[in-house]
Length: 94
Image 1 (spheres, one colour):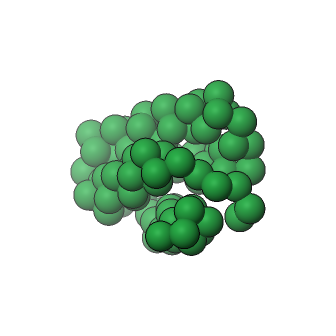
Image 2 (image 1 turned 90 degrees about the horizontal axis):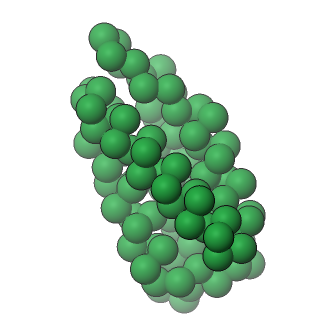
C-alpha cells in the first residue's frame, strides 16, 4: 500500500478491527462493525484514499450479519481487517 494514511484514520481502522473481534458471536456488535466500516469507507473515499476504500468495500461484501448463527466468514473478514490495518500502519511508518 503506497498511500500514506493519516494517523486518525489508522486509529479508526484499529478500532473497527477490534470491534470485529468483539462482534464474532454478537449480532448487535456485528451490525455496529458493518456500520462503522461503512462510515470509514465513505471517509476514505472523501479523502481520496481509493485503494484502501476498495479494500474495505471487499470486506463489506463478505460481511453479512446473521441473527441466529455464527458468521461463516468471520475468520476471513478478521484476517482481512488485520492485514489492512498492518499495511496502513507500515505505510504510516508506525
